[in-house]
Image (cartoon, rainbow, N blue to C red; front, side, top):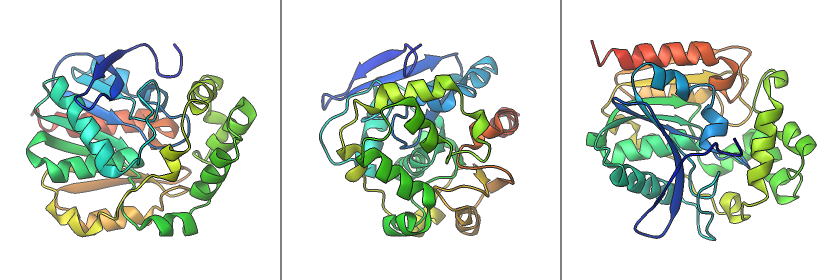
Length: 275
């Protein structure tokens, strides 16, 4: 199925082409992936989004600009750039209101879109979201961030062995990394310009968290090497209508290491709106 699985492509007003999956019918649930080299929507969420479609939701799984099979321009990859692209995709698909599910960078994008367009976001699901500390703090504190940046800069991720070493930092149990996921990532990373990571700008959103209005479900693995699990307390202290699932023996990819629990808890959370 390739790096992102065969899906659809839309061209936005600014010329960006975004590749995305569109599966199922019902209320829209949008899955937003993280920033790891070679990432794509399908690669991140292939064990999750089919369960949501089967449960009666319309699932949208985009490749962010710079990732997957979407455009990879030479530009500054700021948080507002990603939010604008995602908003443009929702406009193109005439999705006026939806659930956002975001991991890592995708979590920061989900938070910022919910802040910018509160009427558009009915619920938030956040897995170890970024944007809760200054960029410099992430680089100083987190082993995964440091090694990811170095491996990408050195071109160490263009083969399966190098990519597997990096992905092993994402999980508490590296045995859960499939050959398919490694191959999907390698297929994308060679196409990514350096600026995708070197120019990334995600501001600290902590001061604005109390503005979030919708119900929030959060997940965090306490063995996360990319975004510190202390971020869960940051969110709990700042937000109303929020609950959190904290997991031992779990790294940065809750949706991979604990996919059945993740899918079950998310669907129960979304089902509350149907009751």
